[in-house]
Length: 310
Image (cartoon, rainbow, N blue to C red):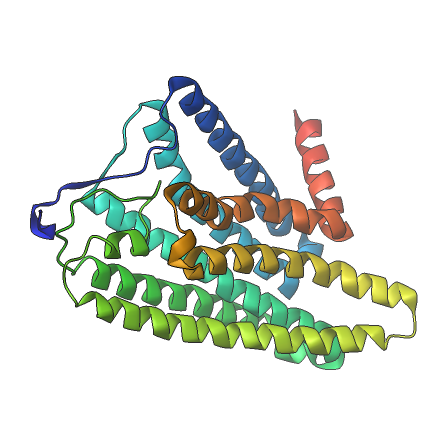
């Protein structure tokens, strides 16, 4: 039995128990993190350098790329280090920082995806009011609200989680620090406070989800009423990537947190955590660039320009 005041570090779950598998996991994590860095870095550079991409849709996409990079580089480097050096420890403060940053970037990502849904809704259903409803100041305010809300939620959850007395050891059944793993170590009923906070956050997230569903119902109704096939194709080409990213993020995250305890196991928990925290940041740039011709052209120009300079 140990108390949270005496815990100086936590033990994370080892991804593999043989050296060959450890090196394989290290190479896979390295490949995923480099793919995320390259893809999101290209999007950020293309949007920042391409003046014709200075529109609300690409402004929010740039913010999404930043949250993707923050999300993957909060968890993956430590997992790579532990795998390479055959260790499983993380300091108490490091664990708190990891929980805060993970919650911060994942929350920001969800709020940004909600705002991007609103952008698509206004663009397709209220095109004449697009400049008014989504001016540069309005976009900056919405992005700031998304980041600020994510920061406040992450701060509240982290502070509350680490104020709980921990007396069930310091071994976390996860490859990175997350709130459910810490709550399992708590020996006090005060963990109900954290559950209460999670209910509040879940209610807000559910409100965003209802808004997204309602918006897409209106969007698809408007698109199907368009007389020209070219107009329909253009509308779908901007909506489908967003819908694919949103579906990947929500389906993996919801299943990871709301799956029945009866089917829970360490290997399944790790697999689901990888799916919602590591895979989306690496795949999002690919999903967006596949169908967005403007973005593909901007990235191509950026890469061509870099090669010509050298």
